[in-house]
Amino acid sequence: MSMRIGRDLYDDIVAHAREEAPDECCGMIATRDGVAVAVHRAENAAHSPLRYEINPKDQYRIELAIDDAGLDLGAIYHSHTRSDPYPSQTDINLAFHPDALYVIVGVATQETVMRAFKIVQRKVSEVTLEIYE
Image (cartoon, rainbow, N blue to C red):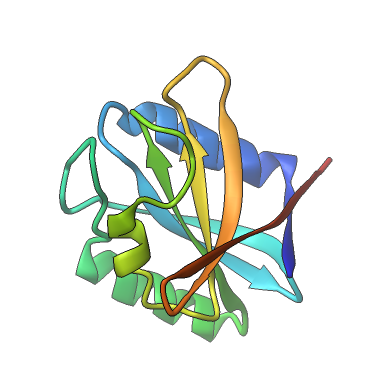
């Protein structure tokens, strides 16, 4: 399993992560056949540098928009502002979408790192995130 994402969408997610720091950002990525086609920013209702919680109204609105467009919820993304971009135990415990990937943007250092994971039944496996121009 993998996801392809264009440089423009990748840059939008990175910008979102940098804008929200020191709090974590969050949002959803709509895909078609494993290719990212839209990024939907959401409010982190937790307003925390240590965890994220997608605002329920945003989640409902975004999932409806993705469904209405005939797309798939390809990924849920958030940032880690103080740690490596790897799922925390909280991230694992709250991974309720087994068909979606979980994309984490690490902005703890100057160099941004984005990684994608499949989390099913609390088992984490990294998947390929292919960035194209």
